Amino acid sequence: MCLAVPLKLVEIEGYEGIVEMGGIKRRVNLSLVENPQRGDFVLVHAGFAIAVINREEAEKTLSLIREMEQHS
Amino acid sequence: MEFSLLRQKKSVELLLQKVDSLLESIGREVRIMEVCGTHTMTAYRSGLGHVLRKKGVRLISGPGCPVCITPEGVLLAAAKVVEEMENTILVSFGDMLRVPVDGKSLLTLVPAQNSSVKVIYAPEEALKTAELNPDRRVVFLATGFETTIPSIAWVVLEAQRKNMKNLFFITSLRLVPPPLRAILCSGDVNLDGFIYPGHVSVIIGSRPYEFIPEEFGVPGAVAGFEPVDLLLGVISVLQQICAGEAKVDIVYTRAVQPEGNPAARKIMDTAFECADAEWRGFGVIPRSGLVLRNKVLDASREFGLELSSRKAHEACRCGDVVKGSIEPEECPLFARTCAPESPQGPCMVSVEGSCLIHYKYGSVRWTGSA
Ligand code: SF4
Image (cartoon, rainbow over all chains, first blue to last red; front, side, top):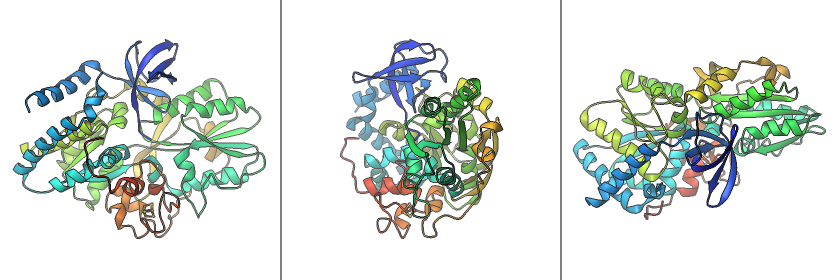
């Protein structure tokens, strides 16, 4: 039940937005996040965006992994 | 963003090597509680749980399955709504409706005249159902942890704003940190560390767990749900053990900030207030639940439903499973009379229930595809 998935926010209309996954579009309630922007990845749980994914931090984790792979 | 990297075999195996070298310097088995059912899922579905166990890291599932810890009394109150109240629609999440009580479930009860039970996937559907059925009462059996509570709170506030007269709530909303204190105080389970639930922490942040390193000296990390995320959490705990320190680390920084999500918490605080609450397996834990501030929306008060506490099915050991004091396989009913098609307790119903996860994925071994 605490499952949430990062999906790309492609449209914003008031407190609602549209997220996209593999070409499928879904409506999402944006009332719980501050200042979401088009193009952001939002973490979607039970029809609500509960967080905006921090791109910089995501990149940090990913580059940590890439680095590890290069050194192996 | 290349989230697929977080599932890739090579990344996972490199991290496993790091686990090996840390374990070597620790020199003994390490016991880590992963609090959230979704982490249990990550560990078992990929077979990583077994790999870690063989290496010397034992993952113990904690109380992080909302369906599993909801006490029987709440289900009985909901059953009363279905069976006795006419002209009423009970709505709730699917797993909740399938939990067995006295050999039945909310989905198999015979409803009162003109009443029915409806599965919803998102809290907002409760609101829609009430709007589409103005001449019927809608009762939302609302359960969940901090991940889901803000969405339910939003629905409560909308119902208030729209002055809706036909939407009511039976709430069983629970907070994750208090049972962790209960587990540590009981001393029943030996723990060297915690993997804190990523999505609960999106809302509450990392600070509410600070008492764990401070008062109990136990390390921990907030982790995400990809295999790499889980391993980063395990590695953080092992590193803390090696360094002889204890803190609340965040390895899921792309989604979790120390202060959590203040906007969501504000909505949560506007709709609900803190109260003592009953948990299956634990009994009443002080200040571990949330209740409606606006009592007019409270179905249990409005319709005189008693949320009585009652002992669960005698032989079902869900109460011990959620505390981490036994493994599902230690329950005498596991895979005998209790199976997904004939569940005897909530831990075999919920997708986050340890019994169901062990039943379905217990024999899965790590092959590199997570
Ligand atoms: S195996 Fe079934 S009966 Fe036993 S604890 Fe799990 S859910 Fe309960």
